[in-house]
Amino acid sequence: MSVLKRKLYLSLIEHPKLIQKQIFKALKWKDGNVYEDHQNTHMYILPAGIFQEIRIELRNTIGKKLARNLLYSLNQLSADAIIKDAIEQDFKGKELFKYFCAIMSLFGWGYAEHLDFDSSTGNGTITISRFPQSNIPQQEPVHDDFAGILARAFELSYGGKYEVKETKCSEMAGGGQECTYQIIPLKEGTQVMGSKVDVLQIEKLDAKSIVNPEEFDKLIDQLSMPENGVLMLGEKSAARRLVIKDVASINSMFLKTADLLGWKTMGPVLFRVGRSHLLKDLPSTERMDIAAIKAYLRKLTLFGWGIFDVAQKGESTYHVVLTRNPFTAGMPLQQVATDYLIGGFISGMFESLAGKRVTVKETECAVKGDKHCLFEVSVLAGRKE
Ligand SMILES: [Zn+2]
Picture (cartoon, rainbow, N blue to C red):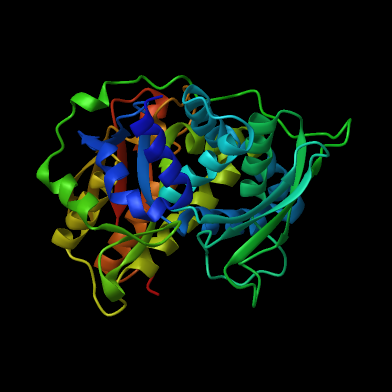
């Protein structure tokens, strides 16, 4: 690695927020999808609360214990992608792990404030500050998914197998901003939940050759990192916290979870989260009109969520067509439509428009082999709320 590049990497590890602007020049946008031009990884930008809300909804639906096992075991792909990159940059051991933490920070996932790990015994603790929060107070630590990612990151960085347990959590009442995780060597014979299905290799493209449209460059300009690990879009009271994530790891997580629970269970969880998130995101006094819905969908398009097209089909019926939907990227063929999260967002928007509950059905879906995803919205059947 060149001296200059190494210097950049080291400053990234120490102060992600100082070089956030510089690094985010690597984000590219084409036809409704986002990539980074270093490894050409397919990414998307998401509201920071989404995964926290999915975690809590999942716990409420299937029970804490099963949710914990699922989230801990199935969500480890993101560590692999980042650490593979760092290995290629000649990082080893602690540096490798710190690089992983720095990338997580850069993408808005909080900041590894304190790492105390003895690789000879496999014991230690790590404290993460400002991990994205749901702001729904919890009784006990809930970041089982991130504990799983950490376990994998320790394994890839130091060798060996570890068990990571969150002992203090920012989501608990009075928990502050810090989450603390304890690392111990994995006991032999520990059962880990698994799922055989996985996402297929997502086709890579040469992202360096992409010239960003002005609209996307403007969005990137509006991103800021007021504190290490906190990624914000916009200004003052209108600012929203975001995270950036690679598409493959989240799609794999959704797919494996649905493989074990069934889309019949997982689907409504995602739908409820999408709907309630959208409704919370709107100014409470304002109703959306079609122009506002289109503007909101355009923002999601710039986030890399694909290209939306809205058309009124009848007095009380709308069609929303989604092409280049990243949530279907790499998904093996499924029997049913799977875009419940987006369906929930769409439901919330039209609910705001209609002033009452609406029904949304995804009647065509790219994961079923259809050429796009089609959401049919009926504002007639809804009940007043
Ligand atoms: Zn779909």
